[in-house]
Image (cartoon, rainbow, N blue to C red; front, side):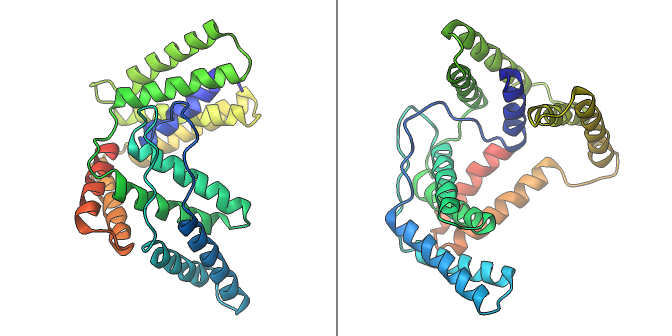
Length: 270
């Protein structure tokens, strides 16, 4: 895949979710044996439930409840403190690894997603409560470092990859860290560029991908840029933070830790 396409897709994800790509660090530690045992027990409970005639949703909820109850008694595994990677991003890396391990053991996408999400919340509330979220510039630096490593992994020379890194850093900083507020149509244009990049990376033709991008932009403007009042970005962030807080409390974590986690999530989102 060409570096420009990789960057476009990665930059879109960074803009929409405010979660940055990580610089290359030593592999994060995996979930603790206790958490792994809880995940195995939860999957077994889901399978037993389904074998007994339970619905997929009912069995998923039962397995999730057992997992959360079980992991509440597990000691939290602190994320590694290497390379200066922000704590929340390290917890996210652990959650991704837990998801992949769960899938490798035969877990469904839904059950493994719930397992990884619960592990992320547990890691973040236990270890990241007093850490400030990464700045926009730090996230862009991590993204650019990842682009440079991807370039090197494809066999390109160090000079070329250094240029790729600088270009990615400049573009990310200009587009995401500028104090000039984007208009709604600007954001829809950025979204359509991501649609085009993803379409091209999937093997689509330039004509088809351009049409898909144009349709996506038109739909985005129609849905989100009309004068009809709707939930603001802050409203959506508040709703997302409330859902995270509810799940954090339901998992048995201290209220003050959940409050701090919500504040950090809002700082990332808004």
